[in-house]
Length: 322
Image 1 (spheres, helix red, strand yellow):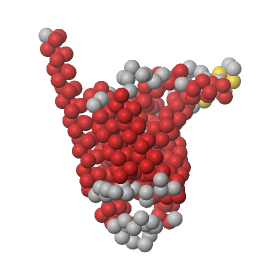
Image 2 (cartoon, rainbow, N blue to C red; image 1 turned 135 degrees about the horizontal axis):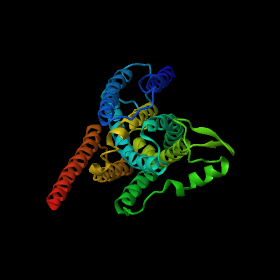
Image 3 (spheres, helix red, strand yellow; image 1 turned 135 degrees about the vertical axis):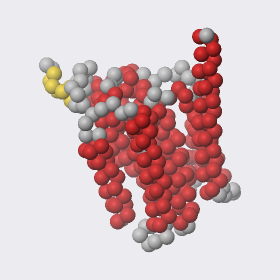
Image 4 (cartoon, rainbow, N blue to C red; image 1 turned 90 degrees about the vertical axis):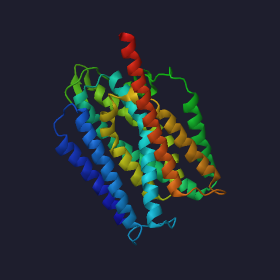
């Protein structure tokens, strides 16, 4: 329990420093600043894997699955990469939501900050229930595995013209029935006083839509991380580190989303791999290093192919203009 409390304290201290010190004044986050923070978050996450290695060699933490220090560390890194890769879909949706509600760039960080805070709470609840269900009913492992494979196939065969329109969503319409919504904004405020009374600004509406969409994405990502490990602390900590780095990754990739469109096939491969692993775990044991290697390779191949295709398209456009 002490380890869990210290972890929560660390997370909230980081968030407090983020909003209260480093991003106290709303500003447009440049690609250079975002890349710096992305590198910091990745470095912190990898450094925490060293803490995991140390913890699982002590009596300070429960180790229900009897993991060795090296296995625990590899599972944390693998889970972190899985969650980070699945977060890429979130980035595409967040970009659409911000564009739809015309959220100024300088206030987007504030919306994402509170969105991350809510995501931590909801992910914690979903992970807790997921781990409890799998430990209580072992057969649900096969159900989760089949669901991941189904999700991968759905991503593979879904049409690109199935666009998401935030203002047409159930969330937006339901929120409008609860509280008046205005198109006006007043700096970074979520609510403002209008002639008709208090109303929610586009910032608050975007926050709620992002929060609900994150819960929907968690339906895929939580089973995926549980497919890597059923250890509650490893599942939660790797998930949270991926979420914490999502904001800087969004600002880093938001201007380059088109260049990484082939990463979706990496996500399909990762979901399929984890799903198959969950289904065959009783008969075939896949080593931790093999899981980590496959996931890392899938991401690298997706990035490489995306960049190569992007260069070819830019060259083709430049040639046609000439």
